[in-house]
Image 1 (tube, one colour):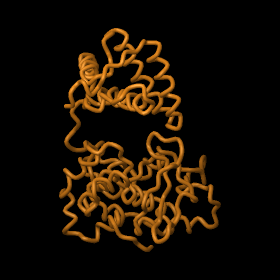
Image 2 (cartoon, one colour):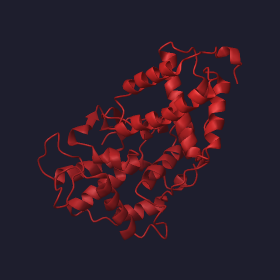
Image 3 (spheres, rainbow, N blue to C red):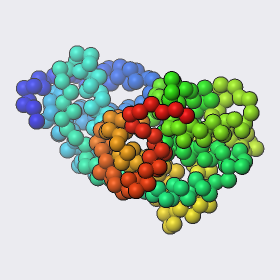
Image 4 (cartoon, rainbow, N blue to C red):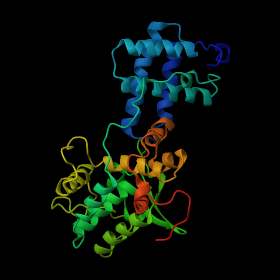
Length: 323
């Protein structure tokens, strides 16, 4: 830990703190409403602590005292981490605006994180069984295969797929890309590489729908009430869940093997396929390095070295590919 003198004390009135927090919330107006709400709620707790503690001067020991305050409230580890993350982002804002010299919250970690992801993953044999069970002689089958391969190959969430449009799927030189609206974002600002196998599945589905306009959904609903509109998160989840059940790959894992398990499978497969931590973070839109490292701790579970073709699900880590 750095010595305390590296973090010169900063005295602040409660009214000043309140103004800085208000300005910080305005500065993140580009993020989703839910994200801004989380920061506001967490920082309200910090303001309460600040007003009762009366000794907080933006030093490491002050942040540690705040963490102890949170622990005494018997909060879950994930909640404590959320409160500390909010304070860390706020202190970074203060640092960037010259209000404090350094961010003391960077030196205080949240509660212990799990050593592996709680969600289950699909084995390579199960992925093949799942894909082979889909009848692609009809449009719904083509769509569901494309959905599954996009969640697996691009590590997309249901939310990202539900907002995707035809115009978001583009080719840049020799690589196909998908523009997505990442977690906590209000615009489609992140670009994801699309492996050739996934790009082919998307093409086959889109072509089956005939002539389309750029603004139309990449994955369209087939239900009577919302036909031709973007699939909802619930609709995507139900479609993939039905495929998981119909293929019999769940095998008693109804609550643990979910559509989002495809994303976790992608993370492990990338770790086994030679992707760097940074590449996994970029592909999966992960901002916190330790989260990405969890996939590397699970590397080897899929035994992809015995099935070289399985790496086609996530593509190559550093080569230019043609569709």
